[in-house]
Amino acid sequence: MRKIKDTTTESIILNAAKHIFQHKGMIGARMQEIADEAGINKALLHYYFRSKQLLFEAVFKKAFSMLAPQLNEVMNADTSICEKIKNFSSNYISFVLKHPYLPNFIIQELNRNPEFVKSILTEKHFPNIEKFRKQVNAKVEEGVIRPIKAEQLFINIMALNIFPFIAAPLLKGFINVNDKEYKQLMKNRKTEVADFIINAIKV
Image (tube, rainbow, N blue to C red; front, side):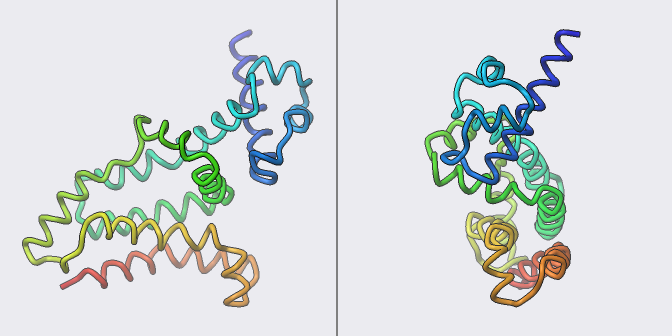
């Protein structure tokens, strides 16, 4: 029972911290309000997490671990480049529509603490594009796709999928749509982004 209780308490703390961090960021959040959100006292919070930085890192790693394995699996699957592009866009957009706080949460930490980000590069499921790089290089040599560096193609895929979520408030204003309409646009991008990229690299 003790183990179950401890696991449950830690989960409650992480969920409370996620809520506070996504609204106030690392700098603006206070341990006391995280404790209040979790319904525990501050002493118990410090028992589980000795500092706000350690708590933030735990929340960040949990958030990143929900997304990274999916992306890594897509990039290393035994599928064609076109299928990888389609699956990446579909999986990423579907996932973020269910967890809309994630992109900005991760980007904030990338900018705030680049040294910490280096520590997650060694995580087991951190996306590895080596197989994708070799696949792209081979298809370029075969003349199947236009000459393009695999790194540039990967960046294009990432940028076209991620930017609409981190810049959502700005883009909604530019194109003059409400939240519901914008969400539908994002759903449509599951296929539209992939089609755009595939058409751009086709010979």
